[in-house]
Image 1 (tube, one colour):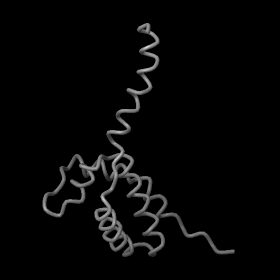
Image 2 (tube, one colour):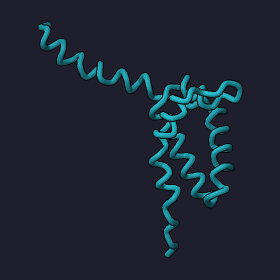
Image 3 (cartoon, one colour):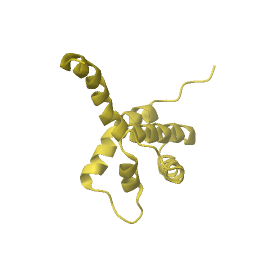
Length: 108
């Protein structure tokens, strides 16, 4: 196999590696805890349905942008995550805030 052909095949695979390394899977108990805590906190400012949508959006963003180990660090009840990791998490869920702040659509 020529070097050009090898590189043509290997390059797309190499580009997928960072995605698989970052795509985290929530451990079931942690996602349940996240949703419970998030909905409880968000419900103080918005209605429960919006809070559930916001928190589900946040869970999806965290899962898409962080490894399972990073999610565990963010959810740790014993060791506070680094300021950098917290900032990255807040940045990741920023777009979810617009959804939560949007006014409810009137029912027809």
